Image (cartoon, rainbow, N blue to C red; front, top):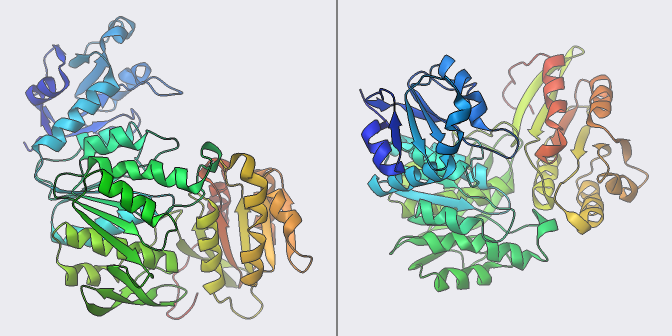
Length: 477
């Protein structure tokens, strides 16, 4: 059997105590009793809302071959009979296991942070590196204090490329995570007004993101967006952290991986890039200038991790947008079709503007409308009114005449839009969902964008449930 971990290695790495007849090893690790697979270990992590120990029995019933539990919770498990590894604290034990996984690995490790584009960049790296070797990458946005060690602990010993997303809401959160990951290449995609309610300025956000450089291994690389006003701050931080090689990407003429020219389309993108003294023509299978900029970071990180440049560039052409991050659906309605652009995963001022640009690039057929369905951007703090109202400018510039809004903060955008824009506003997402289902029509191009916590993804799902999906013909939106 090709074990992810033998139980003897688990015990040693986690400083655990065996209880019962342990299996020889495990094939995976889960913290979710609902989705655990047969032969996996269930780590009973105590989260903010639930305690995994309460679901240990369900995990066993669903196929868990081993439980990892806290010593202090053992009495509460009662008469539950199962193979267990008992530890002082389950999350701390998973962190130790993640560090052990990194210690045993010979993989080239890439870590990605930034205010916008972390997950997209991580998924692009997964896509372009998968044809070149065994890739292990974070699933979804597992980028926090439990997501990073869980991803590390799940990394097979045979991995050749490890890709990790690292996020934060406050100062000091990236530092321990990058110390675990110890990347060969650290990427900062951008600095923007995300979590602005927790920081006094963009420079403060950049300083927090720059903690990623502290974990870079000796002789490693930093990849920084040269178009960012915080580039010099980030560069200084990388130097101070002892990073040996600092690289840049962007449209700035000094960029090592330079965006020379961009040609956007409704379904894909083309660009001319300056790489290593040569101008390369690159096709990307997803639209948007922000995607092209992230693609340059991907090319830089992949090449610095030892990947073949030509094969990386070729793979970009087959990349597709992810759910909630630009994925397009063509839906049958009223004898025609509408196009739904799902940007509902998350939002901040920079990603809102990027999504508005995507909608602008979409060309509806005669009689169709460009409709922006927007929800609140969360964690904006005292800046909420200003940043929501500021979206009026790019909406007007894009020629979008139909704007449907849900949430209390987005009302500031409603008040800032001029009279020629048709605006619908509802306080509750459910009320806007009901409105949207009856108001969309054949020919419309609908883009949904909001912070994840607003629940605006329910609008996307409601449209998908109400109208069947069809395949688009070549050349159509």
